[in-house]
Amino acid sequence: MFVNNELTADVWQKELEPILREYKILNFTKVLTKMCCKYIGLPFEKCIWCKDADDKACDEFIKNILEDGNFARKNKFVSLFACTYIPGRFIKRLFTGERSFKELITIMGSAKKRYPIIKKLKIFRE
Image (cartoon, rainbow, N blue to C red; front, side, top):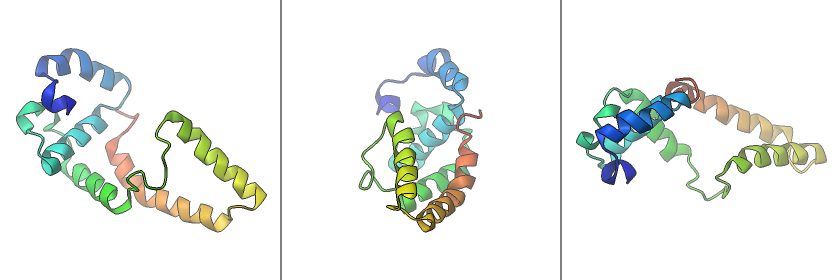
């Protein structure tokens, strides 16, 4: 909605792009925006800066979201807190016997399956 209603080429170039580049999420932003153009109707002319995003990464990312996303059904934590709380809770439960190593192996397998798309998004790398 921000891109469609508020973002201009001038604001992108002078304000937003330098910040995204500094925090190394520029490629991810471009892929996510191009994915919105391809799949949910965001007009390309509103964000020509995303045209060089990798089409294959867009396709794989949307496929991953649709196939493996939980759409907030399983996990309501969306903040940085969740990034530490959930693994910490799992480790605690692992040591108390509430969770099993089999579940850990399943989770690691799922993460391994997602690694190629995460690598293509270049989050915190470019």
